Image (tube, rainbow, N blue to C red):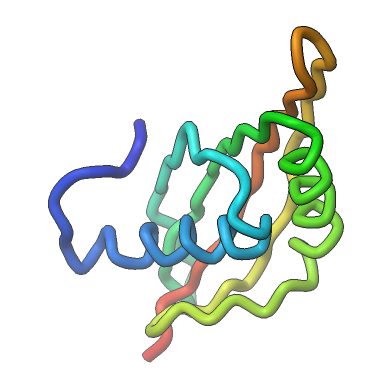
Length: 113
């Protein structure tokens, strides 16, 4: 289920993640799906975010490929949150009628505090 609509304290990190991923992809890539699932361990609480991004056109695909390469080591800055893990789950390509790529990523955010 996409996260859109009214702002709330819970959704604020989701909006920041979307902005950070778009910046990492040099402004390319459309966020098609963003799911958030609460996550907790004995010592930490947070949420797991799964996003699907669509890239269309040669320049966008190149930016998407750079995002894929940089994502696991990228230092995200999201106030009140620590990105404990960021990984690419899947990548799908199609070349016709124009080059398109769909990337699914997952980030684990932990609440700081």
